[in-house]
Image (cartoon, one colour):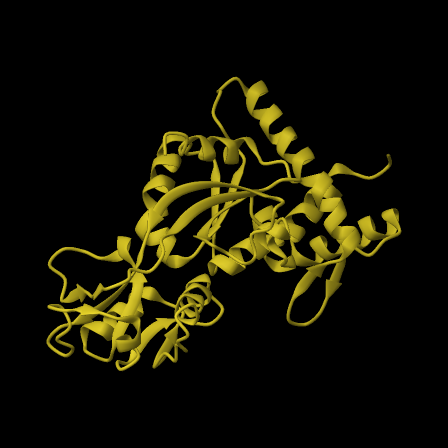
Length: 292
């Protein structure tokens, strides 16, 4: 093999960030040097590795295939260097993806613990919807994801571990909607302005299916990308918000509605790709949940 290892390293950073500028920043080299390295590698391999446009960078099928082999090879080299250094400290990178709600209300404590235990590991957190996280894992752009389940994008080739059971609840400011003293039917909820997440979320898919199962059509008043903002709008009386129960705090202005037939429960799951080798850092992070 007459290809310099540094070319594969540059390829890895461009492939995982899908950005020539971000790769240059992380590698501490110029963007032109990154571009030239990729052109050299493509020429030596006689295959295009990226589809370039003014707005985004995508991997070609050949690039996807190469990444599956380059990623574990570079990770093994990093781990070998750590062992030879004699300091026995875990190094490398942990790439994890999760929604802002999951990060803030569940994952952040685990990230803090992991960072305190392994301070030399670079932690990259990508924020996306649970559907978007599954797509990132599919493309090899994350080592692990924590997402909602059921999730239409979680295929059979993903390994999953249930981390937490939860229920979705409808909450209201009873100064505007006096619903806290009675049990409510799903049909009755349609008389109120409903605040919920956007259609590109697992929560939206789940709620629409739950209402359809009762021959009801859910027509929300407001659809947003933030559960925190939904709660803010519910507090000022703009409607009734549907959020995960683990977000609720004591002494809040909001009161959960008592449904005559509670919504089916859901789970937070940790997922990894069957065919992609995870780093030693990712393995250590997974071990934090073995007691769950």
